[in-house]
Amino acid sequence: MNKNNIVSGSKNSVFKYTFNQSLRLNNCSLAIQSINMYYSWFNISDYFRNNKFSYVWFDNAGDLNTTIDITIPDGFYTVELLNKFLQSELEKRGHYLIQQSTGDFAYHIEFISNVSYYSVQLNVYAMMTAAQAGTDFVKGSETWSYPSTPTTPQLVVSNSSSFGDLIGYSNGSYPSTASSTNTTFLSDKTPNMTPVSSINVVCSMTTQNGFSNPDGLLYSFTSGSVEFGGMIDREPKTESFVKVRDALYSSFTIELYDQDMRRLDIRDAE
Image (cartoon, rainbow, N blue to C red):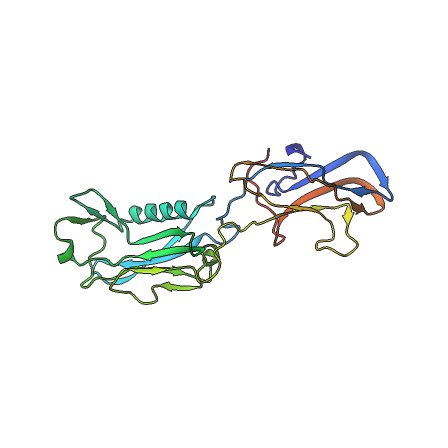
């Protein structure tokens, strides 16, 4: 099977092989000898419904009541890249400060990877008042004003998206009410930055006699230590043969699913 066998419209995850003529198979078995494919499915996408979140910012009176909805472009993101994307969205809207004396940008919402706690850490920093900012700090735009007292913005995780599952946060606002001091949060459930943990190979000809789900499961494997964009090479040490249904075949298909039996959205057809 190769790119010439890909079924159109299948997200490059369904392959069809057509025999030169119909073939009757009886008392046959089938096994995977090797698999070579690129790790080219995204971890954040509209397909997974994990690409949306919001934050609450200040209006032109300095009140914290402006909700900004964010949609992350489909792609493969680490926590660090997700934070860079967030910074770019804050910059786009002028929701940041520049310290004149250093030229540094100050962002008030931040994602970082906390390996020690197996968490995505969320840092939310209190916005200073105009008096505290003085002349050293300049706002990114004039569409908003400083609050009258130091106040944090809020990150919002909604049940309309699976973004919370991605970073390991339950639905809600962080902080739940605006705070006057810098606040740090850790994931309250296991973050899942890689929604695809294994790949199931399903063949239309094979059967496990009702002992597997789906019944045509032929083989399962993972991406292992291969990074996004790299080549996944799998060659089972022992070929595990699965019974082929006795029937007359003109063709058969191979389909690739993740561990939740969602069809893989494969970007590279090679």
